[in-house]
Image (cartoon, rainbow, N blue to C red; front, side, top):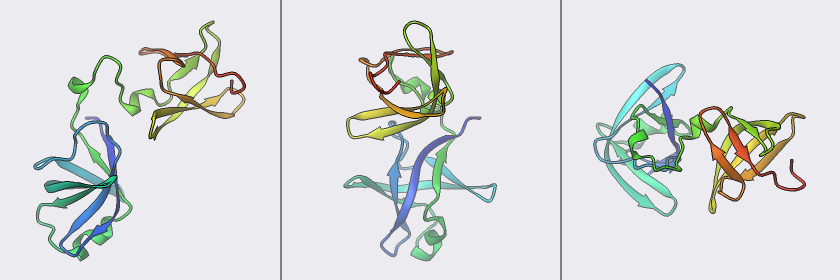
Length: 164
């Protein structure tokens, strides 16, 4: 079973057990009845979402059977995960972040440039953070102008002059 990093608990909200969550998923993973979990000290603690609402760039979430701020304070700062596979919701040019991490990157001539170390969400979309062969980190916008092809084995990019 795969685990998907879907969010981060940034803070508590009010005194009735709600938390503020920074949503890291491009899919609707925060809905009433959804099962999510944290991992603390190697132990998985699961929650069922009872209520969720948007507040600016955050989600305000209430978990079932947690009704007091003192019951959620200990989860502040933890990452949230889901085991739910949403691959069937992927469009033709959509990818799970995890499937891009460690993928080798080549230019159009077949020269190995480096590998993806992270995918960074920005207001305009996403950036691929690539660690080059000489251990330099570079950012490549994850758009068609620079990312020519993504397949099971590699990513082919058009290098940005001065970066690669």
